[in-house]
Amino acid sequence: MKLDRDLQSIQEVRELMIAARQAQRDLAGWDQRQIDRLVEQIVLACEQNAGRLAEMAVEETGFGIAEDKVLKNLLGSRTVWDYIKDMKTVGIVSEDKARGLIEVAVPVGVVAALIPSTNPTSTAMFKTIISLKAGNAIVLSPHPNAQGCIKETVAVMRQAAKAAGAPDGLIGCIETCTMQATNELMRHKFTGVILATGGGAMVKAAYSSGNPAIGVGPGNGPAYIERSADIKKAVKRILDSKTFDNGTICASEQSVVTEGCIKERVVAELKDQGAWFMDAEQSQRVERLIMRPNNTMNPAIVGKSATTIAKMAGITVPLGTRVLISEQSTVSPRNPYSREKLCPILAFYTEENWERACERCIEILENEGVGHTMTIHSENEEVIREFALKKPISRLLVNTPGALGGVGATTNLAPALTLGCGAVGGSATSDNVGPMNLLNIRRVAWGVRELEDLRSAAPAAAQRSAPPQMSEADIARITKEVIKNLQAQGYQL
Image (cartoon, rainbow, N blue to C red; front, side):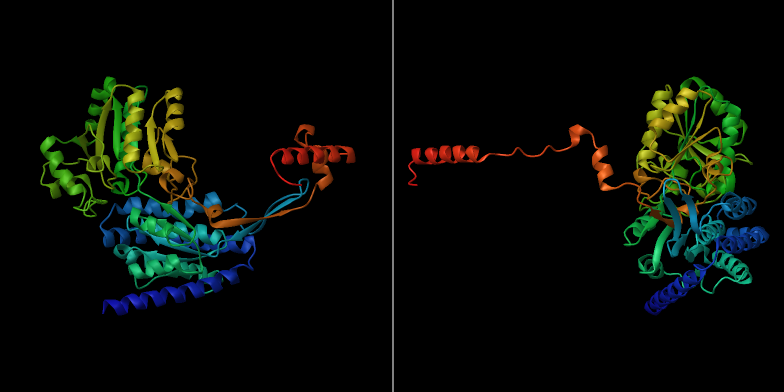
């Protein structure tokens, strides 16, 4: 019975959380060297199994390209580790004797990690590595459509952790995947912080759970090609990004915005590099595939190739087509082309100048994906700075593929598979999330001033002057005047 399975999954989560809490307390006795040795052993195991796990993910979910998922697995393990390995995350992390300050790292405890189906194995690796680096335990909640490959990834990491002497229960994973189990995980009293990567509804649930949460909403980043851009390189980067793992990274471009004066050159270059501009009828056929009746993204197209999507829509495109493009002039929640599309489909907008392009990009982002990421291809520093000042985003990527630049593969951003969207996007952070987001800092501060020092240092104008002293004669005179006034008003005294 479904009810029995739901109850079983809830009980399973409770047991996982008890074990994780105890394991984290045991881990609290480890020093930085021991923690780093543990995490490095897990990283090595992830590297060694990157190919096998990538193939499992594609086979189970039907999303993406195995060779690209190998790169994601390496990004989520080795690249992340190389970036964070020298971070101080245990015990005293800084000390300033001259100022009388010490900072101590304090783990949040147990991290509740929600894992998506689009990047299942790499996200499981990434969240586990940064959680353990910060001294936490972790319990993972797999997406039901990717639970097999996620559970196998956890098994690989657990085996490596055990060999490194880690306490049992440090890396937990829900075996009975139900919505009730995920809700119990997010609301559990032992949950220190929730790392939520996935759909908007799930992220909102994380923030309403009553526990601290770091959520990542949808992306919908436009790619602006400005008139000074190297058009050939700009197009290459956009298509490289949009076809990487068939567009399943949320930082990938969702639309191209360019200027009228270079439109013909941009269109010609897109066609030369494998993009297919659909006519009105073809656009309508594909449009009906993008969203479901409830106006959410259709999972049937996620991570599929352009030719597969064309076949699903019943349209004919040339062999070798890499991306499907539809020219658009409107942006709205009811226009699927102006929304997030985790597959090789792009909207194409043409504007008069960079100021109008700037407005269009803001309109696209405010329609969906506000706070996330966008790209600009330009050699004009002034225009780039104007975009940086005005766009409601957490990452402006310049002359680089969006999908790879956003996660730190082709930029010097922190390598991460959880990209914060900032307050404007409803997120608790705008960071590329890492270990420092998963610990608190306890500050020890020595007194360096006395009350007398504060008073003597205060500006004279800010100091309250003492109230004036009244003589007995003044008091008698005032009393006499008050009595006289009261008698004049008819009071008998």
